[in-house]
Every structure is written in structure tokens, then in C-alpha cells.
Image (cartoon, rainbow, N blue to C red; front, side, top):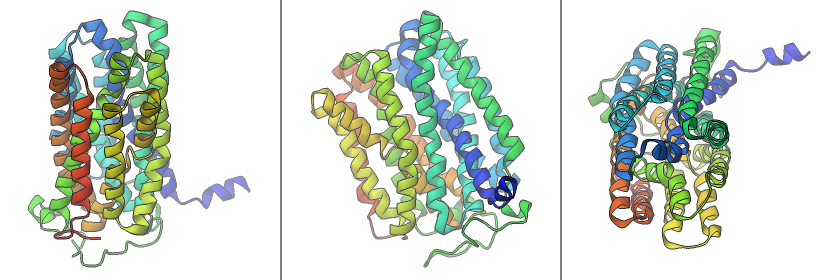
Amino acid sequence: MGMSSFKKIHYGWVVLAVGVLVVAGALGLGRFGYSMILPSMQAGLGLNHDATGIVASANMFGYVLATLGAGVLASRYGPRVVMTAALFWTGLTMAATAMAGGVASLSLIRFLTGIGSAGGNISMMGLASSWFSTKRRGMACGFLVGGSGLGLAATGWIVPLINRIYQDQGWRYSWLALGLIIVCIGVLSALLIRNHPREKGLEPVGGQDTPVPGVKSSGGRTLSIRGILSFRGVPLLCVIYFCFGFSYVIYAMFFVSFLIGERGFSQAAAGGVWSLVGFLSIGSAVIWGTLSDITGRRPAMAVVFTLQAIAYALPAIADGNAFIWASAITYGLTAWSIPGIVASYCGDLVGSHNAPATLGLVTIFFGVGQVLGPTCAGYIKEISHSFGSAFLLAGVLALAGAALSMYKKGAVK
């Protein structure tokens, strides 16, 4: 009876479960592992805040350069092969980070890791549009984006543990451990991921895709970049995603350093706060993604951006640990919601076949924001000796994202 029940489970849920791990590896460990490892690595290598901002931006630069290529390759050759190769690449470069000796080598290796992270994340997020119809897409992408939170929470536990064991060299062993985990996820994706329900003789979860009213169909054709940009709603979505990339990355990259360096938290205590953010974000992406299936993508994005603006501003304008926890909880409840909603919106606008390429295109703008954010925050820290002003800047960009999400002209749904 147990085996019979298992056979009745739609294979889309298997793809989704593995996909959560893919995103956890590509982004949760591949990118946000840096945030947790940063304080001990900074001390071990004697890096100033300018340098850490440059290294973080190098990772984002690699990510943004690879996004469009990853999306186009996934649309043309299938997401499975792209994400598997990308995960192996990400794992190997993460392990290589353990050998870095300064800003130059760190920047190069983190740049290469960013390329791999893009391949894994863009391929998997785009694949959701093939396996889940518009009625379930927001929910599915919410689960996938929650993988970032899963990875983030894992680093909040793994890194302090390794640092306690290996002390001064703990940060090097942390990079090795995270890299090995990502390679294992790559093996799992190669074994279980499938590019389309047709490979299993199935329809998408939720039935055949339902076109969004007022949106033209691509007819299953592989579109050019110009063709994608001609779809109503895509150019505005590019700008909205830029606002998210610039704002969230400042908080995500430097919140732990802010807690330790400016609020007197121990690394273990800061790791506890960061782990809470990770655990909350896992479920939040599903909640907001499901809500966007009901209310529409743009209203859901506007609410999320507004809440995130509050989370960014709280550490800058208020003293006391209560406000730190309030900021962390608010951010955790919304952390990865925008990427999930944006991925769903891409599938709504251009159809499942071109969803990976469209997501890759809008992610370029997201990535430009990610490149600029850490560098600006690092310089602000050096000038003001605090990340407070950088967090306020993040809040302003988040409010801009909220306003643009509700901008009527040129928008859909």
C-alpha cells in the first residue's frame, strides 16, 4: 500500500523537492555562505570593509554575467544538464575558496562561483514553469526560493561548529565542507531532475497552462532577447528586480558583520539570529508565492517590498536588541519572496518554454543591483564607520520597488 501511494504522487513534487536542494546549494550555500564565513575569514586574512565589499561584488558580477547565458542554454538544451554542470562547478570553486590568500584570489574565485550559482539557480527556477501551471506556479517557486533559506540556516549552524573545531583556520574548512555538499546535490539533480512532464508521460501539476489575460503567446517558439522585451510587463519587471537586487544584498551580506562589529554580538549569537532568518524564509516564500497566485504578482510584490523596507531601516534608526530581532523576523518572513514571484511572473508573461531565458534576462538587472549594493555599502561603512546608512539606502530602494510594482502603465496582472 505504501508503494502504491508513492506511485500516485505526481513526479512534479519529486522535481520540486530536489529543486529546493538545488537552490539551497546554488544560492543558500554558494552565495550566502559568504555572509556567515566572512567575519572569521576577514580576521584571518586581515581584510578591511572595502575589500570584503569588492569580493562580494565580484561574486555578484560573475552571477550577473552568467544569468542570460544560463537561461538561454536552459531554454535551448534543457535545464537538467545546465544545472548539474553548474552545481559541480559551484562546488569545486567553493572548495577552491579555502585556498585563497588575499583579495585578488578571493575575488577571482568568488567570481567563478557566481557563474556556477547562476547556472544552477536560473535553470531550476525556470524549470518550475514547465512542471507547474499558472494556478500552482507561485506556490512552487515559493518552495524553490525557500531553498535559499534552507542553505542559509545550514550555514548558521555549520560554520560556527567548524570554527570551534578548527579555530583560526575554520573558515577554510567551512568552504571545503560547503563545496562538498553542493557537489552531492549536483549528483542528485543528475539522477532525478527531468526537463518536462512529457518525459514521464504527465501533464504539469495543476493541468495545462492557463494564459494570462492580455498577454500574447509565444507559441512555444524560442524567443530572442528583443522578442522577450516586446512582451508587455517585462521591461518594468527588469527595473523592479534591480531594486530588489540592490536593496536585499546589502542586508544579506552585512547584517551579521553589523551584529558582531557594531552591536557586540558573539559569532554564535549572530549565527543564531541568522539561522532564524533562514528558517523563517523557507516558509515565507511559499506563503507569498501562493498569495501571488490569488491576488496577482504585482500587489504581492508591493507588500513584500514595503515590509522589507521596514526591516532594513530598523537597525539603522532604533537601538536595542528587540529592534534587531524585529528586523530579522520581518526580513525572514519576506526574504526570498520576490525572486519566487518574479520567476512565476516570467512564466506567466512569456510561457513555460521561454521562462528560463526571460528569468535570465530580468536577473541581469537584479545582478547589476547586487554588484552595486555591496560596493556602495562597503564604502559607506568606511566613511561613516557604520552600516546604518547603507541599510537606510537599502530601505529607499525597497520603497522604490514597492511603488514600481503598483505602477499601472506597461504592467500586467
